[in-house]
Image (spheres, rainbow, N blue to C red):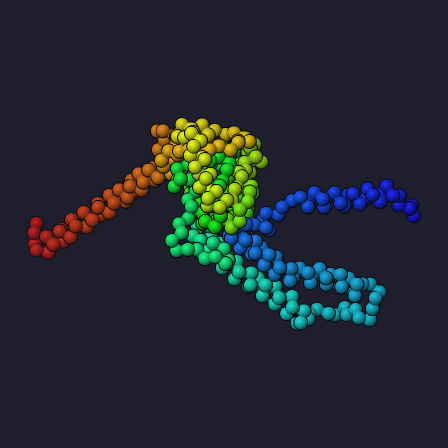
Length: 338
């Protein structure tokens, strides 16, 4: 056997240490969130994983135990060539997984409704209920190629690739996309929510701690996908108010013309601020009629619905007239009329 040299020893140690050092710089945001919804989702992951390990760990242990205990030559007399069934083994093999699946089903059913992104929040955190008079902060999100547009309708401002949120204030996101399906993902707040052209999805969430994290696009959308991210800032209420005042003094306005320019595909887009926003621009983005002269989806659907109603009412009216004519003819014949 060739003795190991000191150089080989250090090289092997480096191969083990370097990945650990690199991983030590990573922050597992999904497992260390700062928002109540994301915390509940993290806890659901841990509970589900723990319950599945109740089966996985014993199976892994029994694999080794069976290999050692029943290996060839250990105890030839214990071998039973006629063994076909064991009620005790069947009970263990089937009962435990079924109980775990039943528990996971109950937990998943309950959590699916409690964590429904369309469901308004009923608490700020596990220890802080939602005050009855607290209104959520409305934010409208538009996924573009390849950037994020955030509109604050109550504040009358908008930003690109920057999301500023006050801590311990519920947020109601209205989310859409301009050209292709995308995914809005702020891991420290909540899970992934689809952003789809011509549709509006919702997300209710809250931040409970100040700090800066990244938000991402979770759906591959082409060349600029890897740089389609935004900075999420969590601040106190005073800091949020100061930031709003700063954006309002930026000077630029998000008009229809500026929106159409912004909607052109672009990569690595820097942070932008808009001091004012043209009214109803988000609803026009949802209905895909921001460009002047373009019919809105809602209007087209209303016209189609009215046309369908008229198309179905006409045969009914004709059938009603025919029925009335038959009744009159029957009455006339009953009275001997010609």
